Each structure stands twice: as C-alpha cells, then as structure tokens.
Image (cartoon, rainbow, N blue to C red; front, side, top):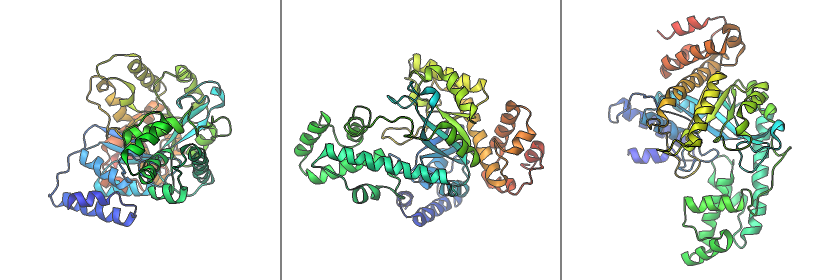
Length: 431
C-alpha cells in the first residue's frame, strides 16, 4: 500500500497526488510509519517534474521524501515557472515540513558580455534565481518567461530534428505528454528522443548503429545516453546549438526587478569559480547587488572531490566567505534534474562539514522569509524589514532564529500581522 501511494505521488493528476499524500501522512499519524525528527540536512534546490526531475518527482513527492529523510528545511526550484509553488507549500503544511519555493532562469549580464560566468561557453549568460516566492499569481514577466522558454525549446527541436532524421519528434505528441503542464525542457527532448528511437529501431543493434552515426558512440540507454544526446546536439558545438547573446534572455536587472516585485529574494547562482567571470566573483557580486541581489545559491556536492583538497574546494570556501562578507544567506541543494544527482548533499563529509552551519543558517533564513512574506508581506526584503533592522547582520539573526524555532504547525500565527509588530514581539509569538 505504501509503495502504491508513493507511486501515486508522481501522477500527473493533482487530485490523486493530494489524496495519496494525505493517506501517507495518516499512516504516520497512526504510528504505522516512522517520522524522524528534523535534523540538520537541507536541500533548497530540488527541481520538480514541472521543469524536469530525473526521478519524476512531483512537488508532493519531494515534500514527502524530504519529511521522511528528516530534512530541516526543503525547497523546490523550477526553470521559468512557478507551477509547483502552491502544491509544495501546501504539501509542506500537511507533512509538517519547513518549505520554500524558488525559480531559476538564465539572464544576460551586460557588464560580463565578454566573459563566461556560469553557463559554459556562453559569455554574458548567467543562471540566476529568485528565492522564497510565496505566490504564483500571473504576472507579465512570468508569462513571458514561460513563453520564451517554450519558443526556445520548439526552435531547438526543429534544428535537432533535422540532424536526427529519420528519428524526428512531434512536439505536441512526443514531448508535451512527458510534462504535467507543458513546460518542456532540453532534458524532456532527450528523453523523448530515446523513446522515439526505441520505437523506430526495435533491434538493439540498429539503435546502437544509429547512435554511433549521430553521436559518435553507441551509448547505453538511460542516463548516459540522454546526457550524450544533450551534449552532442543541444550544447555548444552541437548540431542544434545557437550561441545566445544579448536579447536571448532577460537582463539580470530586469529579472531582479520581477523577483523583488514578487516579494522574493534575487539570488546569484555560482558554478565552481573556474570561469573567467567567476574568477571576478567580487565584481559579479557588486553587479548583482546593484539591482537587488541579496543571496547566493551553491550546489555543494558538485564543487569538490572527496579526499582532494583541490582548487575547486578552495573556490567553494572562497565564495562562501565572500557571501558571509556581504551577509548573503547561502542557499544550497542538489538539483536532481540529472540522473545520479543525490537527494541531499553530503554535509557530513570532511570537506562540507565546516560549511554545514552556514548552509543551515541560510535555509532557516529563507524559510522564515517565506512564512512572513506569505502571511503578512513582512519578508526579508520588505518595507517592514527595512524599517526594523539597522544592519543586515541584525536582520539575518532575526530571520535565522525565527526559521529555526518556528514549527510548521504554528505558521498561521504569522498570518495577518499589521506590520507594526517588532521583531521581539514576533519571536514572542512562538511561545
């Protein structure tokens, strides 16, 4: 029964997902399943199937698994859409999980137009985020993000189809059914090409010959094949790749304005510190801060080799130190949008253990922001916060404490505040 209900959590039917989650939580309430106490691990960067999750996880599925794993805070992020937001925050309330929701996209940074930042081989283009969204209400900028993403994916498919003949995808028939709400990505195209090729070439030897001709090697099916399709046809040097530039994506400043207007936190995304742009990370911080950036996202497990104190690890420590210098909350997670990504970073390793308190502090700050912003428009960058905190460290101390001490079942206490309450009065409400 449990296995069946967990499978239903990934259904494309939202009613079925909700029912399955309620029934699973009832098993815990009745003592039939264990519910570990929240620990100190966090993942605030898990993609859901509304953009692409390599394991097919819905927002409800990730909330359930995060609660079962005892995560202290969990957060979802999707490319170009906020389709998962309401479901995930509601699921968090059902299972008693501290939850938050974010959005990721790509932007153009004019000041870095000749330097690669964190999108390999693409000068001026940066993966960028808004963290702690509390509403998915329609907005022109958000609608344009979705439309532009679909336009790019459709145009990419036309180019890749020409290269892949005789295997060609029909966007509506082969790609859209892989998504719950039509937001198809490059990774959906890769999955669809693998499936379509299996239908066109039923014999394994025929498929191997086709892939050898198109990709240069007969990759095994599954994760390696899909990654190879993406690398050889959709990324730089691939048959379907077109070099982006100014005009391909919104300006960072414009996305930051949208994020701020939405009550969320504009957030820089960091890769590994090896690109020309990220070697000038202090300059990038200044550019981002000029239009409102106030947090940093890092994928920890991608930034070190266990047992090796190499340059990547030094870069990781350096960027965390820079974030601390600027009093940026550090947001971390493991993505899960590629097969093999872990469910949560390895915070107990020798390399990450010293940084784990910084990551946990950032998670608590974002959670507290999300609850106060959603309930009373008194989040991290709100007018209320600007009025009540003379310094960013003082603000961080309050939001960290609130996020640490607030239990999900008490979130309603943060609703309907007038904005006249002091930070001390809000903390007193937790007793």
